[in-house]
Image 1 (cartoon, rainbow, N blue to C red):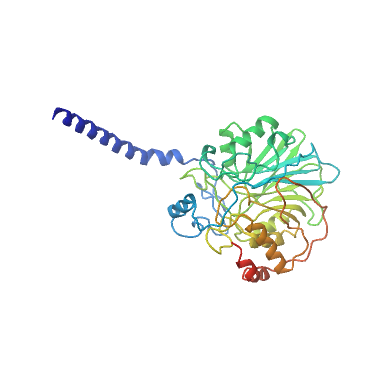
Image 2: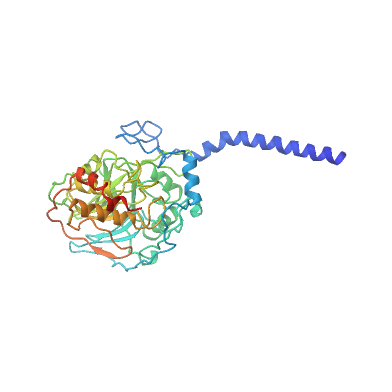
Amino acid sequence: MRLLRRVLRWTGTLLLWTFVAACLATVIVPRYLDRIYYEGPQSAHFDGERFFNPDGDDTFRVPGGNSRLGFAARFFRRDDTRPAWPIAVNVAKDTPPARVTGGAMRATWVGHATVLVQADGLNILTDPIWSDVAGPFNLAGPRRIAAPGIEFDKLPKIDLVVVSHNHYDHLDIPTLKRLWERDKPAIVTSLGNDTILRSAGIEAFGLDWKRAGTLTDTGFEIEEGLPRCDPVAACPGDRATVIVNRNHHWGSRWFTDRNRALWSSFVVTLPGGNLFFAGDTGAGDYKWANEAASYGPIRLAILPIGAFRFEEGQMGTGSHIGPADAIKLWNRMGRPTALPMHWGTFRLSWEGYWTPPRLLRALQACAGETSGRFAPQSLGRAWDIPALGEAPPPVDDKRIDACLKTPAVRALR
């Protein structure tokens, strides 16, 4: 009897302290998981606490509908109705040169949204991730099925890194720390993400939309205004100016820090024609693509085409564009040479592995777009980007919408 009373007393004490801890956790944990990455005045896309899409915020809706918990459960359950993906894929691994000069431009798709662009003596990386897992502590999250197209140790010295937002598959602290410690590149991102990077010992420049900075011989200098570029001729100068441009997305690294940091695309002005990197984005009002083109002719556009389907037949979400929206954005940019990315590296959604490039090709064939300027590229294969030239004819949005209804397109899973 005495032993029973002792067990009950200890059990009661344990339950009491468990209840107290749970109560404290409901107060402490959300505040701990929340982060204030940026403080500043209100604007057309910042309410004083969180950022938002000024063209209408549709990124809070769970892809495919239903509850957020149900969506997460379906994803981690690896629903058997999803099209099969390979366990691994073969990846070419070209070794890039130290520099590319003489007006040439070379691009190598490393994987996901990571692209090495070499032009005018500069080496530029977009959203670099060499980690095997895209998630907290590189433990929980989607696992890489395609090895990086360039081995990290064979990367040339990097001068400029652009980071579009703070999701783990785009802002990868281990990779960025290695790059910073090795090369000390200028790392440019949008507001608030620089706070995350500095907390890891990585220096970065966090800029608002429509702000710019220029690489100089002594570092990176924030500009007072935007560069004035002729709409049909490349921007003057022999160094890169980075313009932080609007796109349509959201940001979070924890559970309650949603939209505490800004998301963006980028225009990098170069003597031989500009580089555009869309980052991770939905279509929104499409006008941000026109804004990107207003800074001068785009020689290379890096556009996402994957992670657009979260249920049968879906062609895009508020957060991610599929090939149809990618063509419409490409159209608004003046139909430059374009590299499709954000597919084939991490499984983030429902569509089949080869669906994004096959759907892109099917839509182009249906719409009569035969220029070859927007074509899938192999992971790890260097690609020589043509010089600026006359743009092919535009593709009508209504024709793309009609092509989405054709049997060849609808059959793709």
